Image (tube, rainbow, N blue to C red; front, side, top):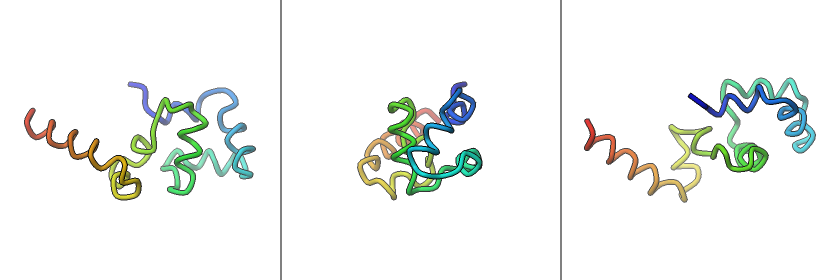
Amino acid sequence: MNTWLTLFDRRGFQTRLARRLGLSKSRINGWRKGIPIPYCVAVEEECGGEFTRLDFRPDDGAQIWPEFARQVAEARAAEEVAA
């Protein structure tokens, strides 16, 4: 399964992101536990949209970024129908 955590194993990804954001590579590496909200858009852009903010923040992404609210509601409804 390809999850957003694979980004951190890609050659040069952490270095590029650290330079872009003006942070240390070790701080970026610490985001394996979760990407802080203020940086989710930058990570989404750096990975070319392969993963989205909603992938990084599945539990609260719809509240943080309202444009995802409908997508989350539709996915939850589909899960209920399937159950």
